[in-house]
Length: 412
Image (cartoon, rainbow, N blue to C red; front, side):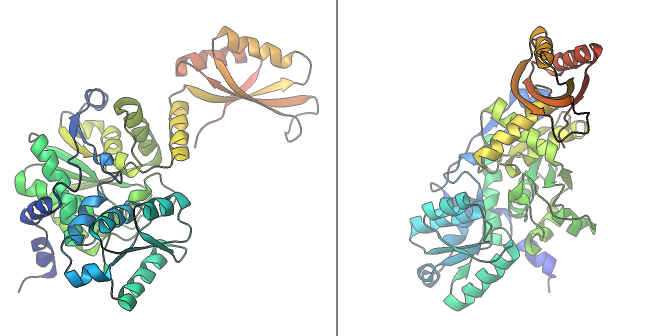
């Protein structure tokens, strides 16, 4: 008799992924796999991008959700399905469930942003808000599953969902068969399980690398018996999972070579680069693969790498914040804190230095009261825009040479 691990491995094969591809063909977008010359030059690797952010709901999650829906019995379809999700799975399941005439109920935690509730409802899902955390919402969804006779569609820990996600790799290798490495985000593990299954079957020698946000190393903790803390506010909320899948962890343990972690600055930089260079919007999870490659240039130098931009659902205000923070890290935006004497013409003289160095002033903030300076002293924060870090450094040197106390306000 086979062990549970062997049973899990047999539950997700290349044939399962190929069957999923036939089922969902024509109902999801065959997204392009395109070469990025500029990102290749920056990274030292040969970068190929799979644009799953071009799906109707802007994420690959449609694939797994649809594959699961298409394997329901008539009775299950009539009764409907339920899921717990505050992200892309809820939209993918709701969109295709509504299209197929299957009632879809989504349980979300109460703190879920209104925009995610509205997006899910706009594609036909019935949203119920329950609990303060995902775990509480999940428990309530499983309760309703039994009470109402619904079918639960897990966002990742399900062979049908993982097989659907694996169709991403089938398309990628069809469009670019010469890849020798894939670097793929891991949250619960559905996408990585499906893609690793295809990679191992078609190109056993290919290197398969997973990526987690450093704040949520749950899969690496599970597989490596590590005890790193899991939690915090991450840009990659799509892969911010505290408990990875039981099924998917067995697949990943067998078929993935390594799991890398990326910090928040690396994620922000990758999101910004993809917008600036590829003119494409991705969420933090969607940029995780690129973040890992850029953070480990020696490891990936010269490799021909496939990266999945797995989702593009990012709040516009958050995206604007990421872009501005990236400009600040590059030295193009700065806030300089300057100590002045409170007398006529003091600020005017400082402005002359900005003018002389052709540095543009965006905002000026005066602070006279809440300082530890004498009553006749004041602190002025000046937000400014420079061509590059060198131009900004020359301005700071000039101000200090004229006797001003200047301290750049650093980003965390």
